[in-house]
Length: 156
Image (tube, rainbow, N blue to C red):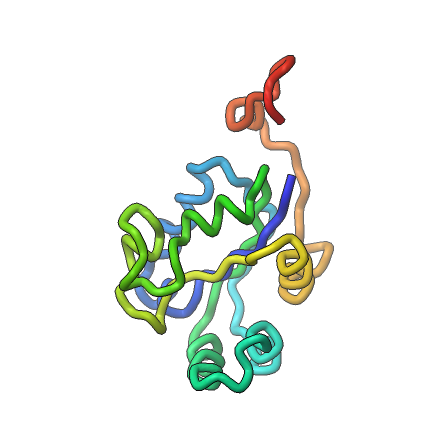
């Protein structure tokens, strides 16, 4: 099973979309193993988006990310990164397909509601930046056999 970091950004909080967005991950079958609301400090925002440093949107991105609380979530599941990114839709809300989180709730190219790790190495690094080991709770959900066919000979 794979873990990934999801950040519900300031616009998701301010527009009161938390429940709608979180329920999509749960309904898909992804397991929430960590979740908290926080203000992202400037230093963490800069470190998180360091790959965009020097681009014209870097400072506005840092400002936006630190402007309001966010909810950070660790989700777990088979192919969780790929599934979560498909669910989120393409980066720009104006170009995201209907049925995706951004396609259904975002029109702005700057305010795009959500972040998800883009690779296993990014997920590991990002989860460690936002959560302590004690804040991640590994447990066995009772519906796992209904989410994944784990019967004899089934897919895991």
